[in-house]
Length: 80
Image (cartoon, rainbow, N blue to C red; front, top):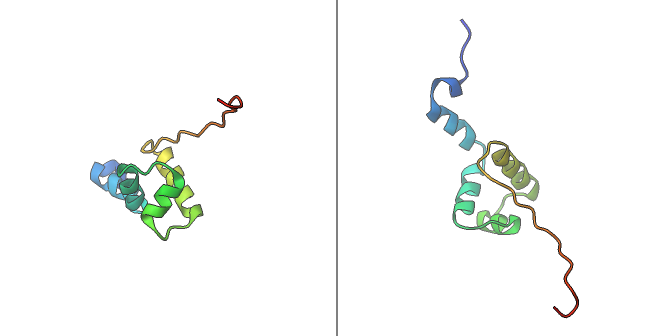
């Protein structure tokens, strides 16, 4: 008999698997507190490296928990 992955057995276990990697909960709390820019999230959390923050944000985005909205560069008319 093969074992079922925990996520198939219990939804709570699946949530624990998502939140388990280091910094994930801190990132979610920072986002919930209104920090939406990368550097604001880093400042709120403290000692997370930029690479690890990027990795965790992409994981959360892949799970559909975070939506990335890229900033647009817009050329404005001179003097406007």
